[in-house]
Length: 77
Image (cartoon, rainbow, N blue to C red):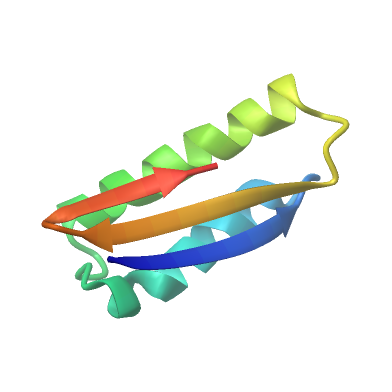
């Protein structure tokens, strides 16, 4: 099982930064960039960060985790 984490400052650029951080890890976790699966992962990350902005606006960072193993990819925020 491989785990990757990145902290994104909560603010106007949070969604973009989270998307770029996750996309930058695709090679390490075996996800083909530009694939339908990669696009779905990026969409989920975007929505999760928007939830942080809406429901935890006082947070200074959003921690994004990617865990890969046993044929699964889990994204957590």
